[in-house]
Image (cartoon, rainbow, N blue to C red; front, top):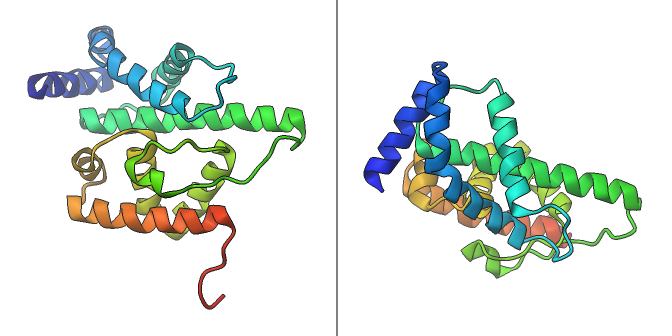
Length: 193
C-alpha cells in the first residue's frame, strides 16, 4: 500500500506537469478505490436512484480530467478532490430531480448518531449539502472534515494530511461538525437563540 500510495503521488505530480501517459498509468491504480468511494455514495441514495456507481466514477473522472486543477500533492488530496466531485455530481442530480418534482418529494434529513461511523444514509442529499455549505460559512475546515470523512471515506490520518492539521484537530472538528449538522438538520435552535 505504501509503495502504491507513493506511486500514485508520483503519477499525479507527473500528470499535473502535463505528462498524459501518467494519467493512463494512474487510472488502473486508483479505479478500484474510486469505485468503492462511489459505492459508499450510492449506498446513501434511494434504491431506485437512476445513477449507477460506474457512471458516477466515470462522470467524476471526466470532471477531473477536464478541470484546470493540476497541482496534485498526494494520493489523499486526489481522493479528497474526487470525493468532492462525486458529491457535486450527486447534489446536482438531486437538485435537478427535485426541481422536476417541484418539491413534491422533499423531506427533512435526520442525521443521527450513525453519522459517527460514516454509514448513515442521508435521506436528502440536497438538505445535507445545504447544511454543509452553511457550516462552511461558519467554519470551512469543519465542513471539509465532514466531506472528506463522511463522503470521501478518508481516515482521520488521511483527512489530517489533506487539511494539514493534526489528527486530534480532525477528531475535534469531526465531533463538533456532527453536532452542528445534527442540530441544523433537525431544525433545533441553538441555546440562547
